[in-house]
Image (tube, rainbow, N blue to C red):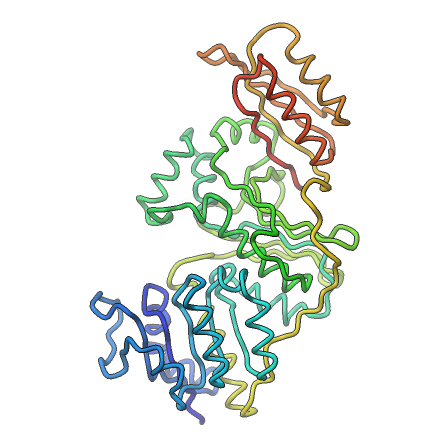
Length: 429
């Protein structure tokens, strides 16, 4: 049995989890997979912090070169995070003839094309199961298990922090700010939660899903992204009364010869499978021409779930090396859509909450402006007056063009009777 040597770069929470899994399960993995994986070098700039796993000092180093240029190492596992220097590390590892395993969603969203192109050129593999969905095997499913499919739709809840916040706001009458504080206290949100609550983390993951499903290289800047900071507990309550749930969705949807790529809060029917995904869990809904509809559900983050995905990638490459002596390289991504559809050209239904002064004629003015911009109202409800004298007016529309809605809301929010920016949530399902 050939021994496959691993060099790990990044010995933080996830890196420690990977080392612990490979060490504690070495005999189990050897028996189950037929390969013997051995960690020969661990690189990190911090050698003082305590880790949940003990390793010999002889394999620890602060030098990247001792991993990148060690001829005994077959696979480099990059768990540094960030774009630089992680990008340089991965490219140099490939140039040095080593396969790569990474969990770095931000880097793949930014520079995936360059990395995969070099890997293919050198007949090396870059595996990245842990970059989306934590322990959910969505990457392998899209690029291998479902390879015969033409995808129409891939969308889901891919950020556990935002999902926890929205779930907490639905379960209890708490504000966004209070729900965020609870998430931070429980360790579900970072001290600086920007990437999660702004939707950027979901955008990074959607970029990877779009590449797998549609062969389309999209950077986060190409993806319309909207976070959850404007959502109030009242909106979630009103949505519930209308039999909808509010979720932050990452959406990749075929639209003719283009694809819609967008991240934003979304109302989905409570009967939809995604509506019942609560807390920090992730779920990804996939629709293909052969498989029909599939739902992937599980832990989307955390050291254990992410380590499971990283170890899976390591074993997969190790088996190919052991069996064939060579790995054929990363999969080629065939582009089967022309471009990304502009958000202004997308049609959806909408939920809107207007904050209006309670006086005659206001509703008529709002309705008139919407009609002028080709927006048809499906339902309207005037809620109880708040202490400030402002009346929430909740509307649901039929399908409308995004550009028309933007123009209408700009005009409506300019009315003297409208006292706060209108909240708009798109509807799917």
